[in-house]
Image (tube, helix red, strand yellow):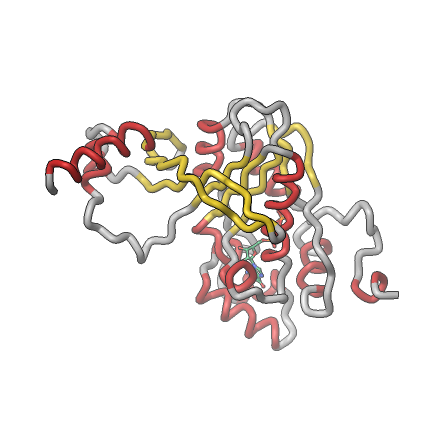
Length: 258
Ligand SMILES: Nc1nc2c(ncn2[C@@H]2O[C@H](COP(=O)(O)OP(=O)(O)OP(=O)(O)O)[C@@H](O)[C@H]2O)c(=O)[nH]1
């Protein structure tokens, strides 16, 4: 590494890198990286943070030294998590926070089989309208933790009549394998005050509380029902315990389209 590159590297490590302890080990948090995001047609400036695990070999090293160990290692085959932060996240009295499980099909492809893509867009917009908040984009939670390949298998099983829960069980998994220790540790580093949690899933709320997150209130995160996502959403309510939409208690596509 040339001297000037080394200087830039050191500067970044000093100003943008922090070590965060989590129940699953130490995390190296990098950010804030300013990121202009599209929010409903407008460009809005968010701060992006991302993190990696501090490996065993780096345990005794400082954060500055640890980051040099990964230099030249692309890590492209390891999907890493992010958090997108908006407003004065550390100090604002109320901050809206969403813990969004990665959904390649919904968020990237725009699949209508689930509500993930719309929930993500909606969360960005609600946070901007509110003035402060964060969206965690959790990389190891694809398919509620079964991974993309198995999710494709699950979709094929669903095509043969199973619902989402039955398909996960048929593949040898629990319905929901997600844990929140890592993002919870990052949240506690970025903000000490309680949050308003954007979710319909009471189990997610409980798991986050168990991970030490203080929650002021829950903000519902329902999206549009369509013929393509109705079964998925009804299964979430009937089998996975997601809370019914307060504004539309008869939340079915056929009821809504009347
Ligand atoms: N196994 C499985 N996972 C799915 C399916 N459709 C979407 N997902 C995944 O489900 C995750 C989102 O979980 P959901 O149950 O929709 O919602 P939640 O995060 O528990 O709750 P909310 O905070 O209310 O959105 C994402 O990781 C998606 O990839 C499916 O058919 N099968």
